[in-house]
Length: 115
Image 1 (tube, rainbow, N blue to C red):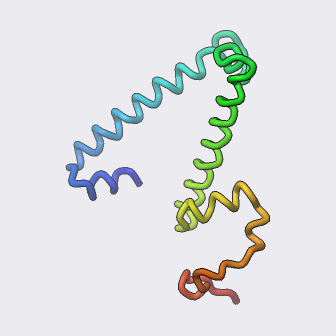
Image 2: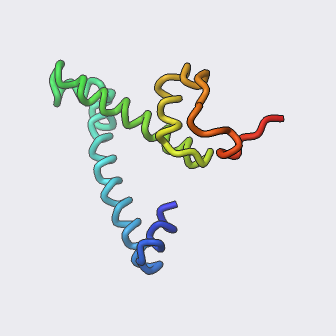
Image 3: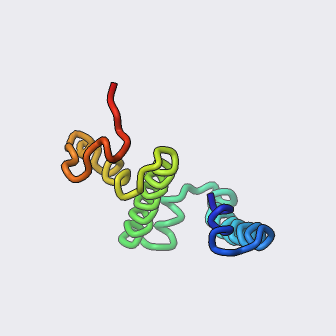
């Protein structure tokens, strides 16, 4: 998905490969640093987060991790279902919203057909 977006922004093939490689490399450094306490001292994420953020500040790290998981799950679901994340995220956070009927866009306009 990111390779085609590089081409639409006017980058050449090799510039896109270089940018993606550099981005993945930077992210892998931070992921390795995040996993180092668990691998070295055998402590889980909540213990390491409480040690660095404190007991009260740990809630920020925990909520940040939870919201990022929700957004990531919604974005991955939207890529599979071709629905925008603004439609998928409320279903992930509040599953009962699936029972609500949408009056804004008719199902035929969204290419939704029932048998």
